[in-house]
Image 1 (cartoon, rainbow, N blue to C red):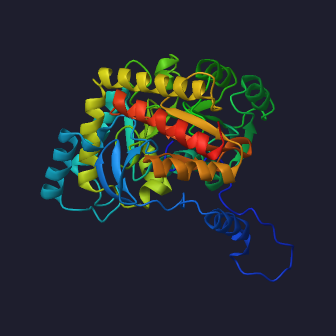
Image 2: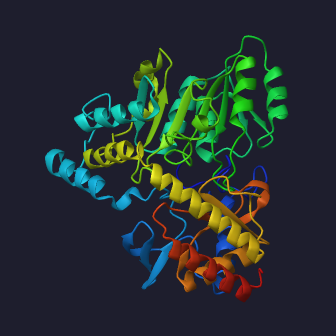
Length: 420
């Protein structure tokens, strides 16, 4: 959903250590250390420590001393420099100070937090909204709280790391199924013991390849088998669906799901996470959800920017249309140049460009950066099927001219590296 985009439960410990062998606790990271060392030795720029020295707009920044087009920031609706959003944050900073220094259940609920939750309820037309300090915490908190020991969580194998971590924290039985496979999901559900608590966790848009879930069919199967449904809409909130409510809206299942998780760090343009729901007992989660209870609340300036952005996204029809135009043009242009893409057709604001291996992927990333273009380099284990890919995240503020520049940069870099 939401955060840096990792899509597996395992993060780094690729090296196994024999039982009883004396070892440093960092030994398990040796393969990752070797991977990074080998990449840097090949002469490429470090793809994992880029510094933006100055951010000029939602689509441009100064990186390594040169102006660079941003195509890997998740800033889908370009709200980070919206004048109304900035003004709201500035005013809240002046009126309420820099932070709350407390949990939401103690001194950490300011007027702005309530206004932000009001904006979410209005945006989704739902009864309840709960704001977390990050999108990661929203998944971690809701999943671990509603699905505990003895319950079952049925989830897509390509689920985001925060989803896997929420399952682990709650100590529920984890039942994964093949990516976007409706039949496999149904088989898993039917094997769960009668009377057990069941939660199906899906994502509207999967962050690595940018593909969408067949939510209409999957939600029906889940409900037919007595499961509650949680959908993470981190990468679709704001621009998919008539009102920007995500794939759940586009698929017509908004009223059938039990929980929608989202983040402020994508289309909303700030930081934070949330859950909205119509469940009549939802409000009790504020007292029993550990990542909500035991975390300091978001600063007043952050919730003010989020609330303002959310309300503007309600009427951002033209922005949504332009973003879809950008997505279609980039996808079609890269495909015609000969790049292998993660989806046959554009399905979201994410266009994944598949690379033959990590070495050439890093070389391509570095070549693009030298051209003046920033994209995300994604590698295993965060990617599905051990893929290496360049993940492009389009923005509603990318101009037609910028998309043309991006395609030219990909062509030059791709030929220089030998990808096309």
